[in-house]
Image 1: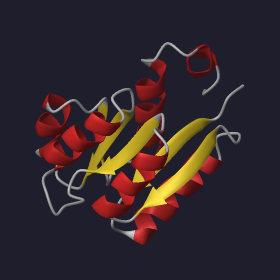
Image 2: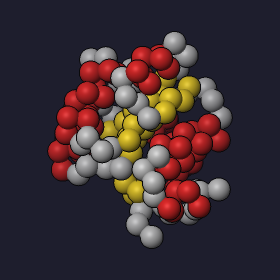
Image 3: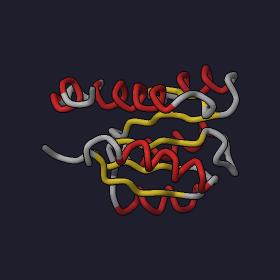
Image 4: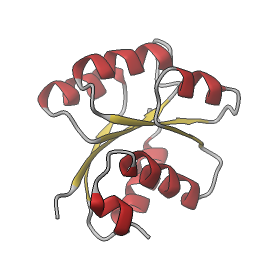
Amino acid sequence: MSRTRVIIADDRREVRSGLRAVLEEEQARFVIIEAADLRQLMSQLQHLCVDLVLLDWELGPISGRDILAMLKGVCPSTRVVALSARPEARSSALASGATAFVLKADCVEAVLTAVRSAMGSRGDDQWKEGMR
């Protein structure tokens, strides 16, 4: 079974660490890379197109919509779960092409559900059966 490559892109270390801990509990299914800013995110994507990006929608210095467009320009098949503390960012993130949206205040299960949904939309059997 192949492991899913994930970038956690958030400017707050505690958010990245928390998301990493959640994903690492999922039976070693993930290769996890962290990015603290837009420069690190784009640098990582230049070297490796990952399967999934957990993207802080306010990562800045440009809009989440523009970051998503840049990301898709480099790695068009990468799925994106947008993360935000602002509920009103949901419609913008989804309209811009994010696969899923999660409020940062939501529980761990909401993040896992979004990851499962994003990866399941690829048609990978391991995601349809494995992450329960």
